[in-house]
View 1 (spheres, rainbow, N blue to C red):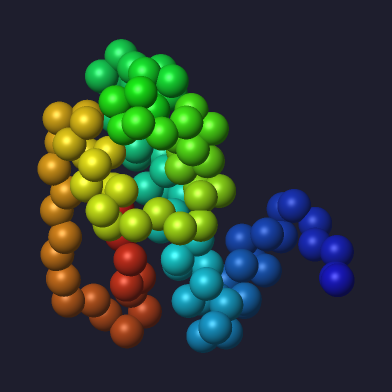
View 2 (cartoon, one colour):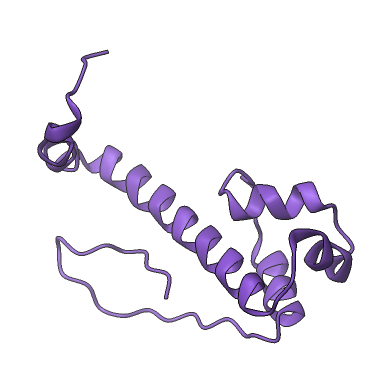
Length: 108
């Protein structure tokens, strides 16, 4: 594997994103991380720790940790709905138009 200097990462990423398969995987992983961060942010806004949220969902604290660090690879829509409901939130899914260079996944 080629070594990349840290200050050149943006240039390297821009080059890698020209590869369609890399871009697809990158966008999916980026969306997972943003979703994980959003769940953790909302949980903290509700003044809950991971254990308290886990208790509400009848799952382990480790499962919540895996979700919030984007390590849970089998996060289903059903689980997302349960998380949202337990935090007093809903889920909004939309299908906006995107440009050819635009990202197909976004988390708000």
